[in-house]
Image (tube, rainbow over all chains, first blue to last red; front, side, top):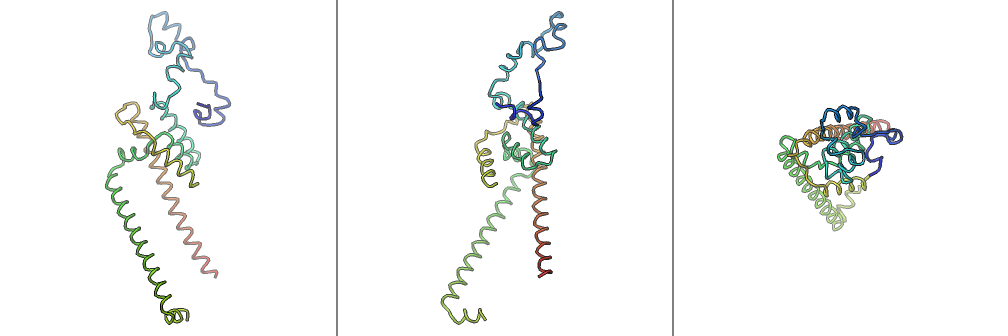
Length: 152
Length: 65
């Protein structure tokens, strides 16, 4: 995974010096060590390398909540900048739109049925129009009188 | 542009189903839906506005002609 895929802006890619507060980088490390407490992150990731290992390379499948939250943040950033098409494309890389609509949209099935019906009606109307045009052409081709009268 | 749309459609087709039972993931999905709805609303509004402007342009052209 490249830095461009993780960060939201080019500025972050160039300048971010993020280091997770794990192991000895944790400001409470010495206190916790002396008091004998073991927070979850320190148990599972004692060092930075262990922290990276914990999340793994296949982040999108192992920790979808982390990956999707990152993509959502990226999309929101683009939306705030007025880049709506890019925001939509970014969302499309991590979220299945049809599932989201099915789950959250009220009357999704009814709306879907209505859309299909209108689509069918439009297709039928287009077919009828085309048939009518073909019929008119045939009539004009056969009867030269009508052709001349139409021209006049 | 059309190729880009096809690409996104292909990506959407091959995407695994969303897991709504994951408690940590659910709020993220809800927020994503809200953003998606907002983007779609903007897109439909823009389409309407474009068609309205085109109609006005045609009217003006007719007046000139």
